[in-house]
Length: 243
Image (cartoon, rainbow, N blue to C red; front, side, top):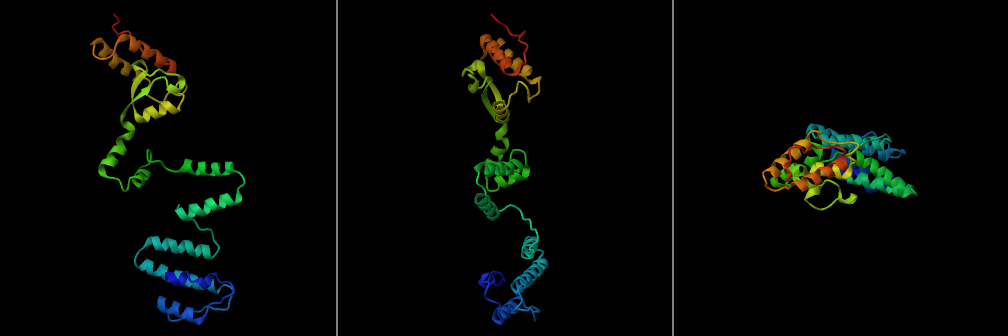
């Protein structure tokens, strides 16, 4: 039926439908007759609607909702009614060409696409987007992607962009997600974490230093100064043993 629905004659404005084509339509759709005036202005549209209705009926018998929905959308478009379909590459291409053809400003294009992208679900916060993104991934890749944002990273307390030093007194352990928040936000005015967490973090470091394991007092004091500089949060170092 697809060949009958997309026959070149529908695009040939000056070529009317003929009995040969209609005989083929009746034979393929197993219809005994048709009540369409082939000489009318909307004959081609009626024939296409006739075929679509037959396809939809067959899809309903098979409970194929995808074909049913496609038939409904196609019928609306043939009748000049608004028809909305889910995003597709073809629809995207049409929209892009429409924008490029009608717009004299690249700023308008950027604004439209930014608005679209801002509304799209992200795999970091939407299970549906995550499933689509990882539909062909291996088990290990999926596990890695699930845990990726929570892997331990070393971040600069004072970012390098603000002339933060690249040494242990300016390093802190943070999960990848928190590291990303730190790098893209002014955390002094909008601190995004539990405000008790810094003291707990420094207590662990102080305990390590007091047991003479890895850290030394000088680095911890400098680290606390850096943390205060970037967050306005002052941590208690009273338990730190300074020689």
